[in-house]
Image 1 (cartoon, one colour):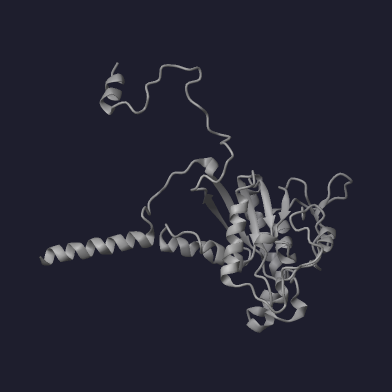
Image 2: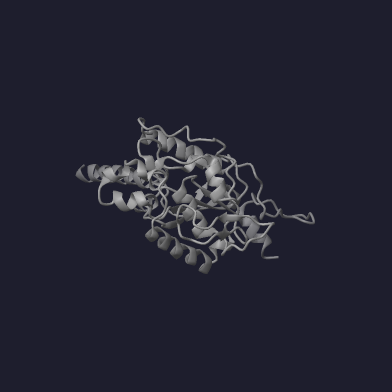
Length: 302
């Protein structure tokens, strides 16, 4: 009887363990066209980060409205830029999606933009020289993926001036080759000085953003956003993986890049595969795969 109770306890323990870790913690297979590769980047150090690391109240002064990158932040940008070029990632990215705040725009251009810009009538620069008092030369849009500014991945709304953003017309002057059409507002109507976006609201916005990604045709997408968006959104995923993997997904340092796969488990994506190839061309007399195994073995002996 004691052994039976012990076995029952062990079975219950293992069942709970599998529920926590996921019913199948091992490798899984998914069709390629039901997956997208996301290269997630948190922006480099902004002026608000430099002061906020010393004192959390430093996030609230109005002078940190739409905070730009610090000189250290620009140094941080140079390292992943060199990395994505050295490992070949810069040639694989189909699209760069960026939060429409100055520090994320600067980071996105610095990491994934083209080289130094030379004045040309047929090509716009991704960033003009000294945008946001950066002291940096202009970045070219040549040999770089398209850039799209999207409000769904912007920083947490409300209270902190550093989370507000400028008029789109101001950004278009500083970043001429970035497409701001999804952010068509002439002014920021989402940020409120006296209302803070709740964690649940931020998660909801992040999940809407992830669902929106499935409407895009691109397979490899770089997303330059903020730590709060990354933490709260990614924390909603990974419930069926090892706890250490879930922990690895959520916390980003300034200008840290992590590549992840997002999988469509519900068949919400409707695009056909571009790499799958149908069999039996020309048509033949292939044996159906549901024949008994012994018949298959017998056939392979002839």
